[in-house]
View 1: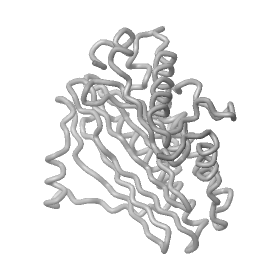
View 2: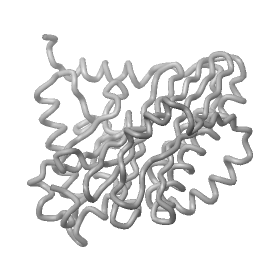
View 3: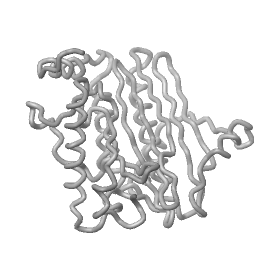
View 4: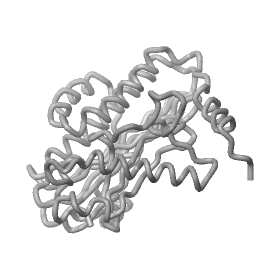
Length: 297
């Protein structure tokens, strides 16, 4: 086993953070990607209805090649049979897929939709706004790049929670240029109302849930680093501004099969890029005293 030294960790960090950006990617492209990432983290969860209205108009300005998957297809029908039912009010029933390829520039974005009338309109608006924004950003970037460079976008989805009370659908976005970048968006739905849940909705008012979760995540980070020399989080970094100090209320999350809250950080948020997307399951004993009844274990 290699010796675990501060210099080695620092070198690994520098190697991943100093990956050169291709010349053909202009500042406008990099700025668009950074802006989209910030918008997903800071705006979508708390202001999703406003986003659905405004972003829908923006996306309409682009010529989007949408491939509709016919409901009569045997493969699609079999896939639908395996999709979860959301209580008595809704289920996932159809897909549309955006696909585009122009030389070394390509994109594949799967867009699920949930059936259930007005009860799940907010969820479908959120999904459409999110995927339309990604597609629009891709169209803009692809137009700038032309036939040069390499740009590969893939967005897939997975159902990560499906119990008596909660349903959650997770989107994983992978963008490969000179190097890869992964980010996650998760929509959590209360089956009893069809409404999208924020992290705050899982906890009692005035519970100071942010401080409780932050402290546990820091403990888990330190324990993982102590157990594996190849694991590194920005917890005690010499550059103070990079260190993880407090959990954002807009962070991605879901509830796992054990009823535990799982916090998900995008690649590069709390650790070097080589760590990828990182997750922390919060033990039930940590949240038991502050959780809303019926939502967590």
